[in-house]
Amino acid sequence: KPRAVPPPAVANARPITVGGLGGPVSGQLLAGYGGRLPDGGRSAGVLIAAPTGSTVHAVADGKVVFADWMNGYGLILIVDHGNGTMSLYAHNEALLRDVGNTVKRGDPVGSVGNSGGQGRPALYFELRRNGQPVDPTTWLQRR
Image 1: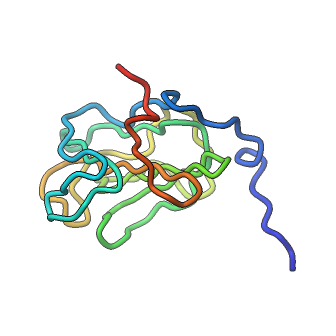
Image 2: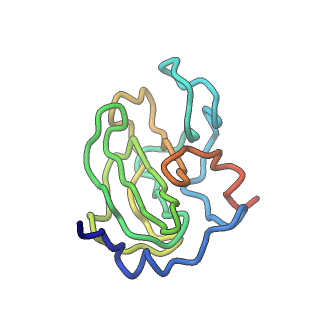
Image 3: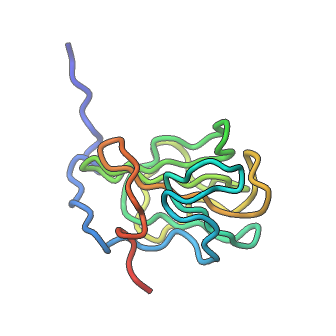
């Protein structure tokens, strides 16, 4: 059986360190990791309120592996950072990158919206390590 080989930009990625990621958007924290979301569900990421159209930034270098509509998330973009790490950016008003695009930390990847049933403009941001959600606040740089 042939094995899938990650693209070189992802396969050769440096490991991401705790506290080494940039912030995805400036705004007010509405729901922390494990907290209650406005719909009553538990958050596997963080929900950050920000004005509609605010720029959403990639938190680290990587490759866009998904950029489309997904039920419950609205317009969502997923970046593979290599070494088992992925970041998810949901409820966007617009996506600024396509599948296959490489991104650098700080690059614009979307704009804040309320797609997918989000009641107010906000970014839902999730970080996954080896497929499992982790608390993104421990991985983001302190400001």
